[in-house]
Length: 87
Image (tube, rainbow, N blue to C red; front, side, top):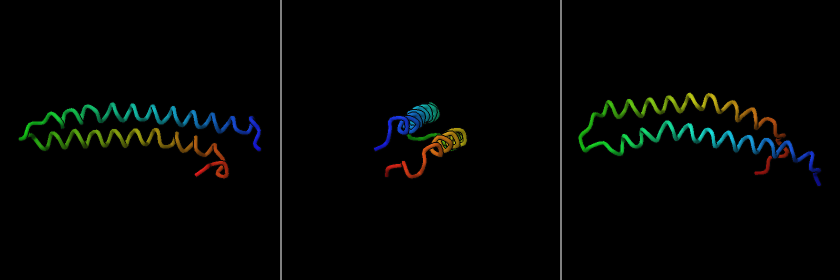
């Protein structure tokens, strides 16, 4: 049986990952929600170039955020020894 002190760092990492995930989700929602609203409100005939540009910009902004949050998540995940990860 594992001791409480052994479990604490894993719980702390899990909490940090949950916070990171929630923050990342909010950022991604803030990028895509305006785009989704714009696309949903388009009339039957619309400027495809404008619609494409908004989607492409959101994609690029999302990738920029992945470049920020991805390494942070990887750093947190490397704090948990492989043998303690339950699949």
